[in-house]
Length: 182
Image 1: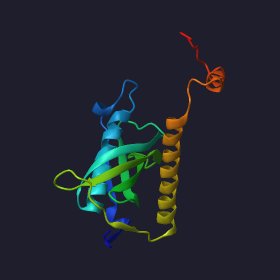
Image 2: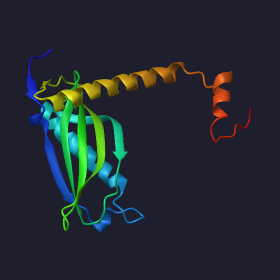
Image 3: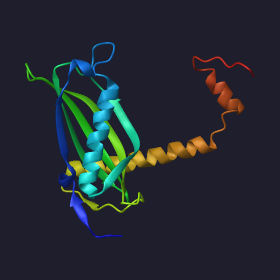
Image 4: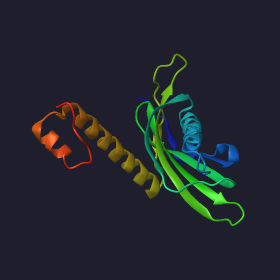
């Protein structure tokens, strides 16, 4: 275990990009897939900057699309490392869109990417520890601990849940599904 620590501030990256008509979906709003691509890029840059190594996306833990993004808006993404494990980091990203004519800014998206640092041969490599400098950084770190715990609980539940039990089949009757072939 190394004793090398870096601040959250040392991981911070901000990018801004003007949204063009070529970025739209069929309803004329900015395509969510395009935003996901930008999110992955900034998560990579943030994790690589912090760790000093090439990083890969291990999982996209949360992507909440809150408000649509319009053509002509300036999208700004702010990323920071919120949590570190041994070789992994959780990068939190906030997406805001600004109407550049009116100056109105709206929160459009919050995302959490788990990134893993790799060495030159592709093996996981240890990342620096994280220096938490204020209450907001402590809150974000603790929220990541909760996210990890919930993810472990969910994965364990998947392993032990009996989908064919009488109670599971009975529970399905409360949803808008039809069971056939039984």
